[in-house]
Length: 84
Image (cartoon, rainbow, N blue to C red; front, side):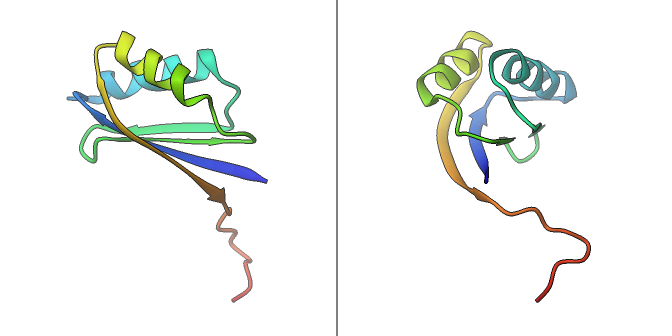
């Protein structure tokens, strides 16, 4: 089972901001995928287990951004051949 973790982040202004956050998350956690959108103000992490929320908060804060929320849910991959 995979977990999708969504972070609501204030302060991302551009692609470099997204890259800083993605790189920091990859350094600190074992993730399958991490993507950020400064336009939406979110970072999405796909991993086998939910990352530690306190550690995530510390990392985002250390980078100079404000973490407004974290949510976890089971991640179901939307396969090309998925049945309806």
